[in-house]
Image (cartoon, rainbow, N blue to C red; front, side, top):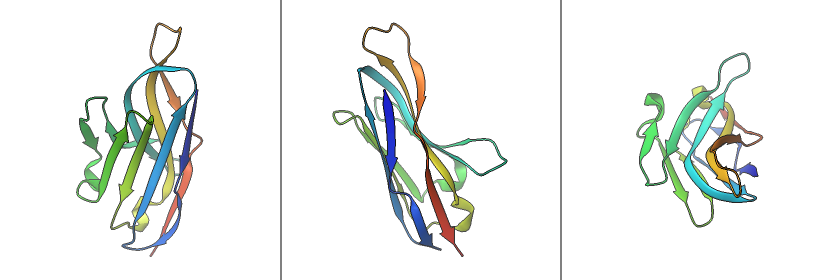
Length: 120
């Protein structure tokens, strides 16, 4: 199983970015999918997640600016980030809690991370 992110980069204050993540491999079922972010020397924090039924959850500081969505058929999750500020600068990681074919339990998987840098 692999999670591969794309869409990071360098943008200016107030601009937008859209992150995408694709899950691939022998996947039986995906529960929650989400985006986390990490600044060097700090813990990884949940930014937003979405359950298999579409219920979303956001970090308070991104509410009203970020929107998470998923395409269950394509096994993809997206994060639309608007009105970005330098405080959003971090490495963003895709996460999925899923069950592989032939495996009885659900496990957490992570992408390799994509850098988002917002200049002031």
